[in-house]
Image (cartoon, rainbow, N blue to C red):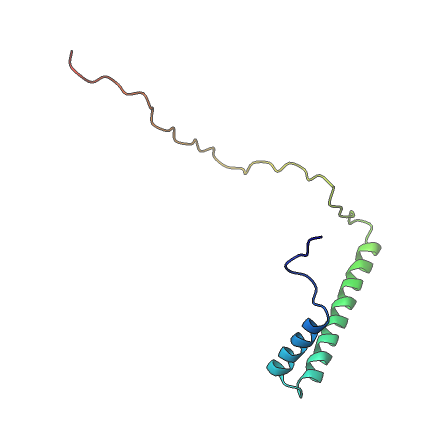
Amino acid sequence: MSYPLIGMPAGAEWLIILAIVILVFGAAKLPALARSTGQSLRIFKAETKGLREDDAQDPTTPPVTPSAELPPVPPPAGPQVSQPQPPSTEQSDTRNV
């Protein structure tokens, strides 16, 4: 049975994390921190719910699926530029015979 090096904290680890949070933020600021975190989470959930409802109401938007194939992308329009050719590896015989 192998144990991963990084996993979810358990038991005493949560107590250590809580002690560090109290030391960093101070006991007086923790309720305000929790309140603001809860409000942020509530706003985030409301916005994502609104986006889902907008997608469900708009029949012109096709559903996005990860398995959908994308159409090929055409090359950019404009003049064609040829790539320079690498120098030849053959050596010419320039000696006088």
